[in-house]
Amino acid sequence: MSGLAMPKPDAETLRRRAEIAADMRIIVPGEGVVDAANEMRAFESDGLTAYRQLPLVVVLPETVAQVSRVLKYCNERNIRVVPRGSGTSLSGGALPLEDAVLLVMSRFNRILAIDYPNRTVVAQPGVTNLGITTAVEQEGFYYAPDPSSQIACSIGGNVAENSGGVHCLKYGLTANNVLGIEMVLMNGEVVRLGGSHLDQEGYDLLGVMTGSEGLLGVVTEVTVRILKKPETARALLIGFPTSELGGQCVADIIGAGIIPGGMEMMDRPAIHAAEDFVQVGYPLDVEALLIVELDGPSVEVDHLIGLVEAIAYRNGSTTCRISQSEQERLSFWAGRKAAFPAVGRISPDYFCMDGTIPRKELPRVLAGMRDLSEKYGLGVANVFHAGDGNLHPLILYDANVPGELDKAESFGADILRLCVQVGGVLTGEHGVGVEKRDLMPEMFNQIDLDQQMRVKCAFDPNHLLNPGKVFPQLRRCAELGRMHVHRGQVAFPDIPRF
Image (spheres, rainbow, N blue to C red):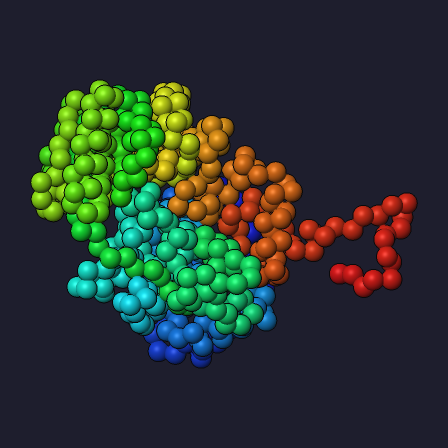
């Protein structure tokens, strides 16, 4: 796996593979178990396809009872488990392990309840993000978080990664729109956190689970908040001669107290790739393209459009097109939503990065990325959630050229280091997974990491759930409570210890 260090496979588990697969068929009968190598190939990676590994066995449960029994079985036999949703993760969070059961939740694909008066939907984790909106749109409602992969990504995976999307600036990430979950712990216990009510008492364990990347439990049900569709939504397509001017326009819009429904930016390579792909009329003579969407009552939207247009021209915009119909508004977004696959037309391979910075640092970071591009001799196309500073640089490379994957990985690591240096963070929505795992010490010291590990230990003391992800080194929970020995004597020697 491209030299990626992962936990050493357990020889005893590998030896018992046929026995484990047979036991899984008893728990999940029918076609719920896949163990033939050629059939498991479809599950060997997630969206970060640079890393691939066949799992021990693939299990596709259909009921909460089956999930509970699978986890309890594995816990009692010290077998690792990797949870997986739709496999769209871009950080390797669902990368299988050779000695791990891959627990695929795609058969949990039903909407369980819709409550319009309370504006909630209860869905199984395999329901797609867009599927929730589809289920309620006939009543004028929608689900706000909308990652670019919303047609395929699952709501359970969104919870695992705390996914965002182009409208997260105004309406928040998954964490701001999930009200409750049902989850199964590694020992098989079924737990409920939150619900249809607005808030919950006690510790915010729902917040702990949202963004936990499959390390703490397996989500089997999700309760989300739905919103009434705005009366009006219109978008501006604004071009700039430099990315720095576009970045300043973003800062000025927010500084004026305007919070758009969405605010996205693309640089020249991404603009050209997207336009070639979807042909929606993007200007090709600009260095940066900003999409600003404003929603709400018609009078308010018209007023805000005028303000944003004025701010854009003050920042040197060379073109400003305002949507005059719903079809035109959607066409503006079509290119942005298709930007990732569009870049595949200009490069054999690309590495999609994900870091977040303070908005004011955008010009500095873009300049830094240009320098890094020259240093590594690799191109980069930029697509990002400009409003909240969430960058998605697409590093262009050719995996068939020896050494280019390694250069792309190093290039990406330097971009993320730059994000941290300017006061940002390693990830905005893709998660840490394996991609950013070894960069965690760039942002956290050992005390920070130990404290995070203690949370992991509280949920999964044997480190069987998704090991090798997020934390830069695999450690046992007992190591966190190292005993201090002074002159050959431990404190409180009468206390039983590991």
